[in-house]
Amino acid sequence: KAVGAVNLLRGTAVHAGQNRLYVPRDLMTKHGAKISWVVNPPEDLEKRAAVTAVVKELAMTAGGHLTTARQLLKQQVSSGDLHPEDFEAVGAAGPIPSRAKLAFLPVTRSVLYLECLKDHSFDLHHPDLWPVATHEALPLRFQTRLLAGRMGFMAPF
Image (cartoon, rainbow, N blue to C red):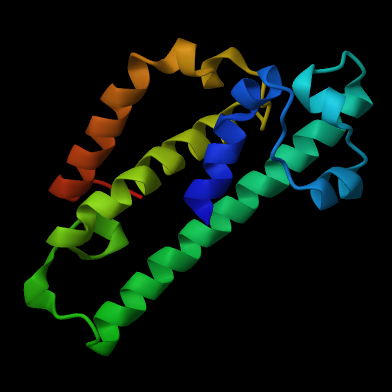
């Protein structure tokens, strides 16, 4: 769920260029935002605040799903449903099965995007969030995060 929500946020600019928008309508209505405001950021601060509220709520929901996934993983390990010999310690996130690590790669990328989005006050149109602007820096940050997780300095997700 989290990766899907983040991918929808990340792809908003591309989808908008194709006259498509995959932001939940109920969130748009709840915050009084219009599709055109998401596609073309308005100058009016109230309209921008409505779009930011939509993006923030969607990002926070995705972050909540990530937190739930972490908790479920820890519960399964502590309850004995998953066996420690099948795992390798990966920092604060707890052990992750070696054969399951590939499944967590999109999660790591999603965490990085959510952190960047939060750093830029949930402004979906900030240039640092555009794929073209980050195409060189993101893979390096991604690899650094994975390496730091493997070495136990931080959680990879």
